[in-house]
Structures are given as structure tokens and as C-alpha cells.
Length: 382
Figure (cartoon, rainbow, N blue to C red):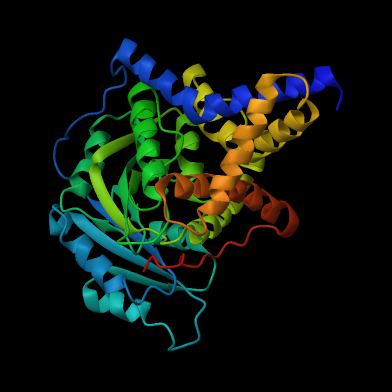
């Protein structure tokens, strides 16, 4: 790599990483402070529309009864709430009791489906559901009693098509640092929602209008595919922080690496061929949000590699490059130390390196092997 090219690569990659990891958040905070909350989200609506709460379940016999009980305890009239459990098949006959336990716990509709993956199970559940609004949750997610009411309140605004709630990850021990990252992610999401629309949701707690539901490729999860598509179709995708749920966190950083690698193998098809990169239908600010929060964040493994290669090429060309080399080496050394000691800085470094590598690993898996539609529960989350 010749010197001018190396300099250009180094500064472009470094500046882009700084923007997507830190600068973008500062930009949102400043913009929101200047504008206030230009996109208001209603605090409550009139009446109680009928809602179908969909739970797609694969081998969830250990948690499905508690999930149905949690759904039935929500602050919503029972005659306006339909609980639909879609059991994605695959276990040998009689080996999985998920369906039987869901029925015994009081689910209104239980579907026993051939193995087709989470998205196809959700499609089947929506086809069988009768609610005006559709809510979705993971089988291991516990909602607070008022979560459904808070989640559905923004639909009082007819421009709102999609709403995601706040999920908190709980873990009594372990090394995973996902909680810190996720709090930052929720803060970004709150600012995006206040200024325009969110760029992604989560599987634990979200809802949309029946008319806004769309059928996507079986390997493309709703978390990333729905919000930008709702915006493309002229509605808003918003965040309701008072709609709270909790899920068990993967206990180890290594387990989180495997979880994110699997998740990213489902996210990359949405980026590459699912329409996310097409700017058609995006307002300008929302297009910038998607570029900053999704596209550039997902490109971070490649940006780190480019910055490291350029740093090596420029190592003897100035103090800035030697300082960059020391910073990169220090990050890797701290990440390696995080595998042996439980010091918070080392664990954070290990988490960052592992999850960044997982984004690249997900891309490799998708391009090399394709992405399966099915899923398995992550380690330690049930």
C-alpha cells in the first residue's frame, strides 16, 4: 500500500469508526436538544382494540407455560386479548411438549407446524390471529403488567405502523457485557424515535398494525426487516420505553459472540438483498440514521482491518500512526486478558472485539454457507 493511499485509508476508516461508534450518538443528542421532540408519540389512546399476542416457539417446553401465564396477566381486557403460540416443529413425535404445555396454560390458539423457522411460524400465527393489532414476543421474555398498554398506546396516532418496547437483559453472573451496550442502544433508539423513526427493533417486545405486517424471506428476522420497511411504506416506526420486558442474558462473552454471529447471519441478507440499502422511500434524516447506525456499524470489522493495515504501512511515518498502533495493540491485549481475569475494562475490551468479529463472522457464514431459517435458543437463556 503506497503512502498517500495508506493515509487516505487510515483517516477514512478511523473517522468512520469514530462516527458510527460515538459521533452518531453525540449528533443525535445535539439534534434532539436543538429540535426537542419534533415527532411526538401519544402517551395513551382511546379504547382497547383487540390484540393478538404471537409467540413463536421451538423446543420451549421449559418456559412456554410461564410465558402464557405472563401474557394472560397483562393489563388488558381478557376478551380483547388473544394469545397465539406457534410451535415450530422439528422434534420427534412426543419428544417436545411445548404445544401441550401452552394449551394447558391457557393459550387461545396453539399451532403445531412443520419446521420452517421463526418467521414462517410468525406468518402462520398472523394468518390465524383475529386481533386488530399484532404484538410479538419471544418465549423467554417476561413482560411487565403494563407493558402491552404502553406498547399499544402510540397506535392512537394513525401515522404509527410499528412500535418496539424496551427489553432489559438480566444475568446473575457471568462475563457478558451486553447490558452496557444494550443501554447505549436503547438510548440511541429513544433519540431516533423522537427525531424520526427507529432503525431496528427487538424480538422480545414489539407490535404493528395488521395492515403493516409483511411477509419477508424466512431467513430475514423481523427485528431489522420491519422498521425500515414500515418507513418506506409511509408510516413511522417508534420506540415506547415504558413497554418493558426482560430476558435472560447469555452468561459468557463467548456465548454472546456465538449469538451475535448467528443473528448477523440473518441480518446480512436484509442489508445485501432485503432493500435496506435502497434509499427509495426514506426521508433524508432517516437515511442518515440507517447509514450511521446500521450500515457503517455492520461494516466496522472491515473498517478495523483497513485501519490496522494502513497503520502498519505508516508505522514509521509519524507519531499519530505509532499511537494508533499502540491503541490497537492495547485493545487486543486487553481483550485477550479478559479471557483470564474479570476486570471490567478487560471484559469490555473482550466484548467489543468478540462482538465486532461476530458481525464479520455472520457475513462469512451467510456468503459461504447461506443462512438457515431455523434457530436454536442461545446458551443459558432459558
